[in-house]
Amino acid sequence: MGSVEDRLYDVAHAGADAWLAWAAWLAIGITVLALFYLNRQLQRNRRLAAEQTRPQVAMFMEPHAADWHVIELVVRNFGKTAAYDIRFAFDQPPTVARYETASDGYADVVALQLPEELTVLAPNQEWRTVWDSAIDRAELGEGIESRFTGTVSYADSPDEPKGWFGRRGKQPRYENKVVLDWGDLPPVRRVELMTTHDLAKREKQKLELLRSLLSYFHYASKETRPDVFRGEIERINGAAREIQDRLRGREQLEAAGNTDITVRLGDPSAELGKHRS
Image (cartoon, rainbow, N blue to C red; front, top):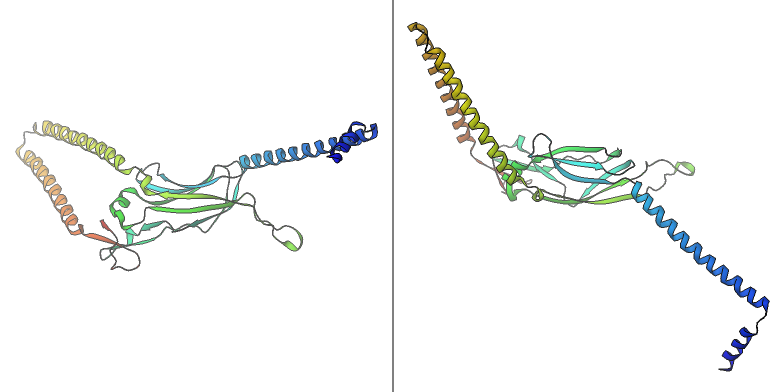
């Protein structure tokens, strides 16, 4: 207790030199705290500026501009600076059925061909490739995977030699998650809308065909020469027979091709799904 009272007494009766020393130490402490706070703010502002100006690369699925059911795989740089050395990594690589080489009722499921890396993507520049058709994919059902997860990694500067003896500096790399899910696409409603549109277009064409036939009958019926009239009749009958033969041939081809195509992964005997050709 006496020690505390002695300290208080010393403080109360301290001289001007002691007070100046304490004031100097207090000023030094405040200055250190201010510098520490200013450094924290500068680092934070620097990180925010780098985050706003660095490249931002994303991978996603997008319908083709002309054919809505054709889905493309797109890699785009949304950032304000160029992205370098873009690489992809998937838990399971995206797959596609090899329709063009289907034989013996089987269609192999193979990995989608992707580049090992993209050298550079400028701001707002993109790389894209055709992946698959949403209609064909829906017909395959559970025979082919529909969800793929992975990452896309990239750097904000080219990998150039740095330092002595040509040693390369370590690039700061960024990484974004990728989720490609065919289930997120809404093809069913779009198919219904397109089907309705196609039906309306077909009915319009039927009316146009009927109008053309009526116009033909209007002018052909004015013919008075029997041989010419008979020639017009035979031409109409020939056109009708040609259409009948074409429809009959198409029905036979559809009947012959109306077989199940089994989707296989490596082993043709493993029936993983069915696709109607």
